[in-house]
Image 1: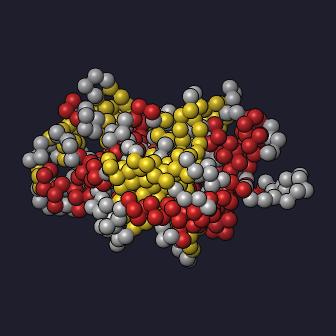
Image 2 (image 1 turned 180 degrees about the vertical axis):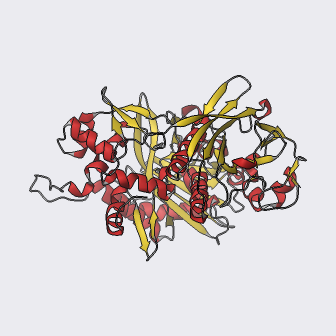
Image 3 (image 1 turned 90 degrees about the vertical axis):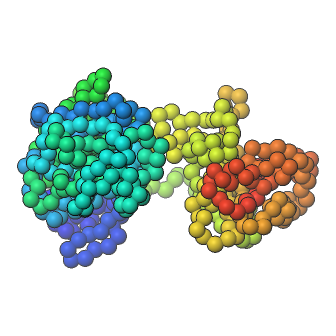
Length: 528
């Protein structure tokens, strides 16, 4: 695939951001960052390696022939799983290793950008067993076909309740009024996305032509996944042909493998890298990262590089193309010794004190989902601080409280033994007029059958006494996370520092918790 020696491959892999986990005589086991979805196969890694060593530079060119296959999309999937993108890959020479690579890529994409099939689901089919045109439409739960790995017909209802994938992914369609089915003109079922393929179009070593289908709830993610798959299939020796998708109101040819363009900022790259490279040298660096630069100063980004979404990403590609090992580290010019930030030292001391009380520290994202932060607590989302064009719904708003993150952590550990005590020292984000400000906070929760307001207060009193030499006062107050009559505002020397209480029953139910939970959240300004 690369034409490189094993020694060169082992030496260069880390400079692509790939961690080598182990080696043996036949293979090298590596770990890749999920944002580089094109690294889900050896083909994608080899493609990047050839660029890094300079044997193939610049964005790969992909030709998409005009195919004859069409897919008609039914209107009854508009609110269920409305989008489909397809491609025909012809002229493959399949063996066990090629099939393993394709299946591994399929599952990695499912678990990554497809968000465990919620956003998108991928099907690979033996094209020679398919009789076009195709139909993608909704059916009832009684509809029957032979699923992959079976030799008898099963209804959709049976597949959802009795097969492994049906049980695992069936909740994605739990509220569906119809079930998506992709079938051909002879009525043969290719797939029941996002659950399982049909058995008749199973891919094996005799397969020479493949049909790829990607159904999705987000058209962009479906198109992204198809582009990554097609790039790998081209490297595997296939010729790609388009498929015409006929929606009720519009037609679209897929896949679109044309590169995208993004404005390249040389000044930004120079300031961030610290190297004064001219534009031609930066262009060569981008080329070794399998990107390009046009005459108008725009970066040419291959369609499979779905991870490049910001000008800073292009700066990273310049660094990779230049070679991290060529950049010499420089000590700062100051002769003064460095020291730890006093504020961070104070926060570490608070964290250590809470940990010594038997709490387990958690580290959660500042960006969270709307459901955890608002819906599950029956809060109004009117004041939420949203991310513009978020990549995922799980990280779409800046949190204004740490409590929901701790509740989510408890909900993921309902099978563990109790009591469970968790905490986090972290940041929250609040609106103050036109500005958004960061504030350091501590939140802690204890969960077991007999936990109470008094227990949470005991832990907080010990913390405040140890660090501030003061006692706390509490006065009844209403808080969105805590049960009415079991929550209070916390004061130190007459100054409010936060709230304490027992989590309200509706929130416990929303997070799937069967035991009481009590805790507090306080501002750490006084501790600094």
